[in-house]
Amino acid sequence: MARFLRPLFRGATYTRLVHLWVPMLFVSVWALIDDTTMWVPAALLLPVGLLPAVRTGEGVQARWLLTPGQDDEGFSVAPSATWRDRLRTVTWLEGRLLLGLLTAGACVWLPILTVELVRLATGHRVDDIPVLRDAAPHWTYALLAPLPLFALYGAVVGLGLLATAGARALLGPSATERLTTLEERTDQLLERTRIARELHDSIGHALTVAVVQAGAARTANRPEFTDRALTAIEETGRAALEDLERVLGVLRETERPLSARPTLADADRLLESARASGATIDAEVTGPVETVPGPVSREGYRILQEALTNVLRHAGAVPARVSVTVTGGALTLEVRNPLPDGRAASTRGSGLRGIGERAALLGGHAHTGPDGAGDWRVRVELPTG
Image 1 (cartoon, rainbow, N blue to C red):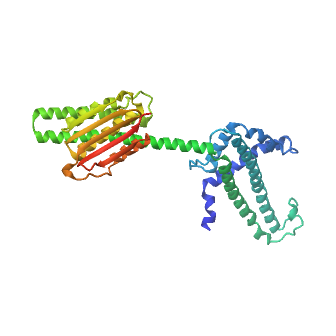
Image 2: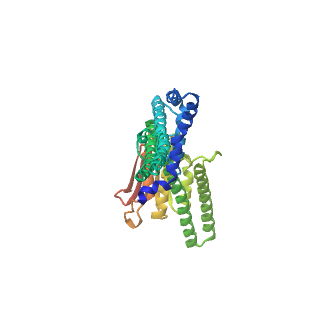
């Protein structure tokens, strides 16, 4: 019983009733003008539904009244973009008018029927309703009096649910709108993933350098070494703050200009930072790095940054060989370093996964792992064509 009465306590039941009554306002006005041509309102809805903006208005009404407080995305609020959308809107308007007529009839005649049944039960005759005109007054009609009210309750709830289902079918997003929404969400997801990688690579590198430098300075216990370590920490931290400001600017969607993302032309900064941390870096650059396309060069910088961060984090201040080669239509990055104590390192870090994701997004390949000669190797090949 409680489940049966639950719709009585839902606001949506009454907002849907208002939604179904809205078309009746126009019909009532027309009835005052000419009650012999009641087909005119339905005919006028045909050209009205073809207007692109009408679809927006109907979608907004459906969201506010059919599913209040739910922020339902099942109703499109975009103007009609195709003839199919216009025809769906026209069909919805005609169906909404029909549902409104049924609702108005139920709300008017069913309560009247209850009143007339009560009059019959109290000894009065009924002349206004043909079905009851010949009925003799009797108290048993009091038992039938609640039935029209139950029917009214069912009609209001049922027609409201029917209107909601019809609106979802006819005012729902079209295939083009669904595809556009999917593309927007995919772009947002890719952007978030890229920002997460940017923060991981930039901030992770800066913190790794700071930790290594601080530990080395404390161990060395020499003023000149401490000064160099603090300088390296300051420079790395300043670069990380610039990257952080740029990424946060993207998140805030500010219009102010942001500092450009670093490219392979700025790779010397990475190498010097790693050298300042105590690692011996043997770097070799072959080919015109400045001709590498911007997206490839920027991602290549981040890949190199993450590879050097892994060297400092997992192997410490060890000799490392860096090779950057630009040939024909490809960019090849390779970083090698000895494995600590000859042990195999883990291949499950988020940094290595980020390297693979960056390479895959650009149509390249990444190979990470021991090379069989006691070294750990990160080799990435990216197309530049």
